[in-house]
Length: 433
Image: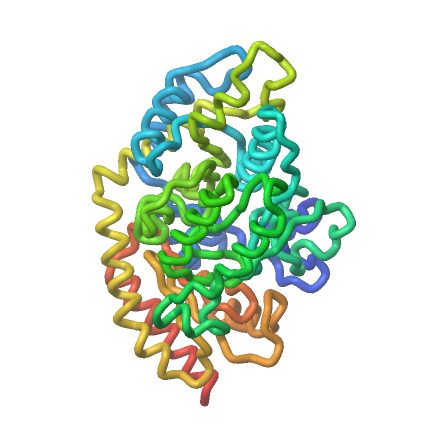
């Protein structure tokens, strides 16, 4: 059996191997469905870790990948270039928030954040200013490499490595459970701590890094556009760079192509991954403004941006990302996301009526709700209980502790959405009975 062979040599992410149940062997995937070695069919309710956009084994993307593999699979990107890398950069600049004109390739979400932090740090040094401090937010999660962990808030993800992390200033983030005023009329009191830090550390801050509109692994916390707009204003007022970590939120997940569009703002640097390649291949992009690029454009070779990866601008990943963007237009994907959002909004009243549900949070094609439990947080036992319960019903839903999430591929049909929502309702009734 595949899982028996797996147990002999493999080490799985975020998994306590001693106590975790055997991994589920998947042998095939199509659309929103995963097929196990045992003949079961499971609905992928988490877009395979929030990456899948147009469904598994999409024929259009498959063809693009095969076509590229037959032409050029990889070439070093230092001193060389190729058509897929150039075309993808052109397409990205066309759809990204205004002003983001320079594209730097890496190979996953965490590294796209590492690139952004290093880029912002060296930007000021190249300009003759020593700005060495970053501001990040409460509940932040930016990845699992050291720089990305440093920008992330303290949690079970970062605690074992806290001695390795560099110091980051932490500002308050909007969280409707603690700030009803912001939810109801958005007086932006939650932005005051950021403003205070920027004033107190004037001239020291290199950048503010945020997950715009939706803080993901921190608990699927949804913002108001007004807060994001205020963050941009504060960065401008204090001449500080704004880094938007859109690794999760990019490419339609929040209902806009990029979450920054909700507030009509452009960051100075944006980090992209996950849905960039529709769930096919690991890939990362860090895009910056021309002003940032020009700080590195110099006769002095020491002002070079010394960062790179062996698989920078991998042609296969570029080709898949191009096909992904093409399908957004061909299939009117943003309209499809709006339909999914409508189904979630209809279901919101049903969810809110349960005593076991603390709060419902919806944005784009994301439905999240927080369960009332004594042991809240990522390690809350109810998360594993809910995971197993839904798995027994043929649905893959991977909670963040006591925060339940339904985040399907955008191609999910109405019948499948209704079925999952009905199962969620039945599970909650079972809990409360």
